[in-house]
Amino acid sequence: MREDGQPAAQDDGSGSLLRPDGLSYDVVMATRNRPEAVALSLPLLLGQTRLPRTILICDSSDDPSGIEAIVAGHAKDAPVPIRFMRCAPGLTVQRNIGLAACTADVVIFPDDDSLLYADAAERMLEVYEADRDGRIAGVCARPVDRAPDETPGDLQSYAAEDVGPMRAAVRWLRQRGKEWASQDPFLSIGRRLNARHEMPPAVAALNVTTVAYMTGFRMSFRREVIAKIKFDETLKKYGWFEDIDASFGAMEHGRIVAALDARIYHHRVASSRDNGYRMGRWALLNLAYVTMKAVHRSGLGVPEDEARRILRFCRMRAAGYMLARRNAYGRDRARGARDALGPAREILAAPPERLAEIYARHEV
Image (cartoon, rainbow, N blue to C red; front, side):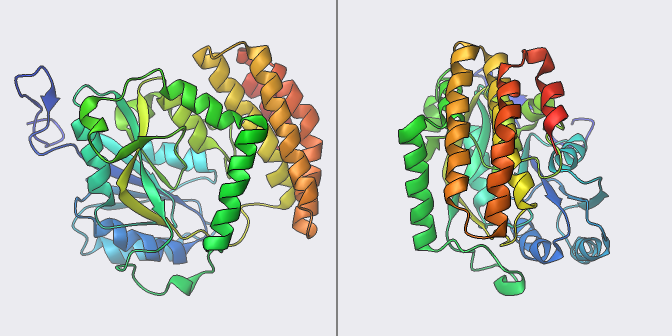
């Protein structure tokens, strides 16, 4: 028996240590000012066919009473402990606070509007358990376009983003266009990092696929991996691309895959995460910071060559925002991206030891 009361690992004769009851997992959910979303997502976490050890709700709401009341209401009869943690604002900060309180083998980090199908966690854990040598650093779920039938209450309790077939098709075409025209640096870097690690045969036999990175609403990590790298608190507030940065860090330790049988619906709130100017600025500055951090840390290619490719992509993204100026938000976003081109060049040219300093100088 371990000190935390869980069964001790046992040697099965193959040299691999296996928990007799399988791997455990914790859930860390960061939230802010969205009790309606938590009311939808929390019951689905409690209804998983394979329950977590603990659920940690890390809340930075201006008024925490709404979310705290939802948590307290569910905690009374919950089959597992639910902890409400009051946090300072900032997605990376909130996730790190929750991570520090975790003790399980795996940590799943859903968004507050991530609606998990009942067997999603079980399917993700199966991938880790098939990997007897610890080569898989992270596993993400597969996004689907329909909420689970068990979703409680009214899905219209807050307005979700339109993700109908037409919108999904436009997004797919836009993504393929970015890849064709300029080689999206996130995809290029993630694929090269993942290619450094072999796919374990037992994992390859499952319904999985390799991904270039994990998006935040559907990601999980081995705790020992994410505890080493953590979420980069240089990325403030919304922390755009912090999920990609964490994925790149995890790929220093192992491969990242998607469990295609683990389904998740992202009931994304329709409103923007911040004002248009900041979103346009972050789109370039955060991209430049996250990609060059990975280039320097991982020794991918020649930094100057990588920087030129990333800058070309930044210019294309800024141009795309200029063409999409349909309202005041779009005009502000285009202006923010335009104003970020100069600072992005500075970040891309920065030596690795000054990367965070130069990014922080321009972050708004």
